Structure formats: structure tokens, C-alpha cells
Image 1 (tube, one colour):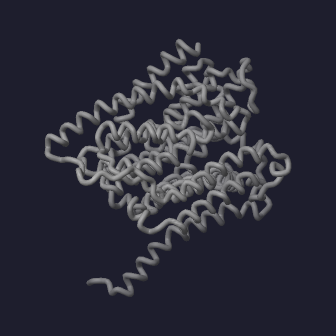
Image 2 (cartoon, helix red, strand yellow; image 1 turned 180 degrees about the vertical axis):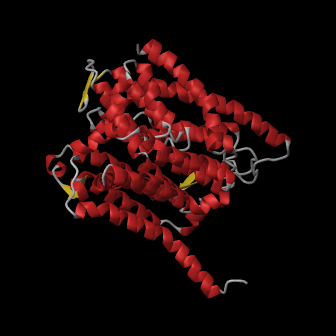
Image 3 (cartoon, one colour; image 1 turned 120 degrees about the vertical axis):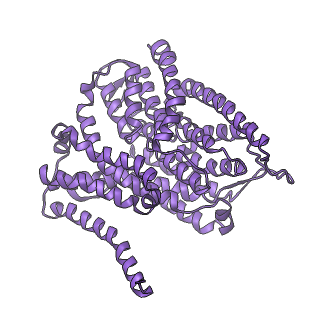
Length: 494
């Protein structure tokens, strides 16, 4: 018997309300210990890494496998239920953690991760996504190998100055429009992720979050320019390989009778250029937050949170500026520009949902790494390169970088003075390159990877699966990183 329209509406409403209710109940339960006066000191929180067993990382592995497998097996179900999957794995971690270790510890870790780490992370992504959605690069872009290489190179050079997320959001849509007439185009998006969403962000603290953390802990702003030789070698090799692959596909497209639009040539121009002001506001907000943390008056101000945690005023100001910039962009951008970009909120919603689960379930992995990272026996530059890179491929590369930076600082080797100790320059180069470069190894290695993939799929580009993408990175990036190891960390920086 068919369901009457009114009853169908009620059923759908109840279904749509289930997950928000679960989330609200979860948050309330995690905050109750704080309301009862149960506190956790930072020293006690740091000891968790020694207490937690390795099997506590199982929910994180389950979250990763869900992202990898479910879209292959039940793609339509995954699209509608990915947030439920993220919350389910989060509960599988948080409930036993609260029962065994203590509810106050679960609440402490939840607030610290979601407010101090996830909130600034997702606000920055949202702001850059919103602003870039109003920037339209128009003109005759044919999607030829030379044009594609030029677009990838421009995006790569931009990444260090407006961030990998900013450059990715600005440049991915022009690349997709230029190649709309082509059948084979997933490879262009994959190399875009390699170059623009990751490797290109290695020259300044603005480029990628790990380098910004280094800047906050005493690494000079332009010190990371020392990564230029590594970046240059990687970019040249990847662009050359990409050109050879793209040229082969291009010839096949032409032979099959597919050709780009040969109508009247349009001059290349940027529409919605006022959004560049908002983009600069966001970049400026990130830089300003680092500067304000060294201003004594601002550094002493913070918003109090449960369990004795605090959100620093510098971060509050950064978040406020980014939100204002994003809202102004949405308000002042003409609807036609968003339509020309095929702009929807789908990609940022998907990233927000999935990374909720990733951030929560990786709590034990990061805690164990932070507590026992010094026991890994790392002493050589190449070891730091691969260790920071391998973990940055699956964990958030910012805290991973910080763990290995702290580990390097504890070795007492003469070099660059930072807040975590003196670090040998070559060792810090290895940690920085590993954290930034190897974020390209998986879709979840860096947030822009997932967003670029989502935007490409919205534009009817059939992207490889989680493991399919790793097949591409395994073929092209791992050999490249082996070259980096030999040239830089075994020969040049011994």
C-alpha cells in the first residue's frame, strides 16, 4: 500500500531528525562530567598515549576502510549515509573509551579535538571554498596538454601563497572546464591533487598547516623556502610525466573525433575578481593569528571551554575574519558566477561529515604517537622523511608533523632553535617534506584532496576509488619519493 503524502513527509522528517538528535545527545553526555566538576589536567591527558592500547585505533582503521570500500559496494547508500557512518565509528571509539578510561577523559578529548582542532580546520576550508566558488576564470582554454600543464603549474605556484586549499578551489574548476570535451580526464585531476593540493604548498607556512605549526613554534617564516630544491625536482618530474600521459590521451581523443570548441576565441579573464579581496582576508587572517600569538596582551586572552580548555583569542579572531570573508563573498557574488562554476555545497558538506569521524577516531592514534614517538628510534634524515610522510598519508599531517618535530628537537643536535628544542636543518627539511609531499598518497592525506575529488565527480569526472587512487600514487609518487630520499637525504643532506 502506498504511503500517503502527509505520512511520507512525517516519516522522512523523523528519519532526518534521528542523526541530529544522536549528535546532540552525544555532546550533552560528553559535557556532563565537566558540569559535575570533573576536570582533567594536561599532564593527565598527555599520559593517555601510554595507557591506550593499540587496538583502540581499530575505529580509525574502520573509518578509513569504510571510506575505501563502501563507495565501491553501495555508492548510492554511501552518499546518503556517510555522516551516519562517521558518527557510528566515532561512537564505537568514544563509548568504550568513556566506560574504561573515564567519561571526563572522553569529554576532554572530544572538546579538544572538535573545538581546538576541527573547528579552525573546517572554518578555513569553508571560507576558502565559499570565496573560490565566486571566482570564475573565463576565456578559451582548450584542454590541450600544454594548456593543462600551464594550469597545473600556475596552481602549484599559487599553493604556497594562498594555501593548498585556496589554490585547489581556485584552479580546479578552470581545469575541469578546459577538459570538459575530453573523455579521459581523471588523470588530470589526480596530478592536480599531487601538485596543487599538496606538493605546491611546501614553500611558506601559509601553504600547508604543518608548516604553519612550525612557524608558530619558532621556525622563521621564509625558512621553509629551503624546500625549494625538493619541490622544484618533484614538480618538474611530475609535470613531465603528466605531459607524456596527457599527450597520449589527447592524441586518442583527436583520433576518435573529439575536438575542443573551436568557436571565437575569448580573452582569458577573471570574473568575480572582488572575491580576491576576501581571499586575501582569509590568508591575512591565518598570518595574523600567528603574529597575535606573540603579542602578550592577546596571548593572555582566551575563551574558556569545558574541562579547563581554552580557545585562544588569536584563533577566535582568525575564525571570525574567515567567516566574515566567506559570508561577504556569498552575499556579493552574482548567482550567474556560481552557476558558471557549477557551485554547490555538496563537496564541503561531504568533507565536513567525513572528517568529523576521522578527527574523532584518530584521537588514540595521535595520543599514542605523541607519547611513544620518541621510542621509534629515528635518528636519520631519511627515516624522518618516510615516518612523517607515511603517517601523514592517513593521519592529520599537522599534528603528525608536530610529533616528529618534537622528537627531532629532543635529540639535541645543533641547528635551528625552536620552541621544541634545537633541530638540525636537514632533519626539519625531511620532516616538512614528508608531511607536505606525502599527503598526496591518499584521498584523506590532505583535506583539499577529498574536496577536489568531490568537485570533479560533481562535474561528471569518474574518479578512481580510494584504493584506485592509491594505485596512481603508488606508481608515480612512491618512486619519486625514493628519488628524493637518495638525492637529498642520503647524498645532499647527509
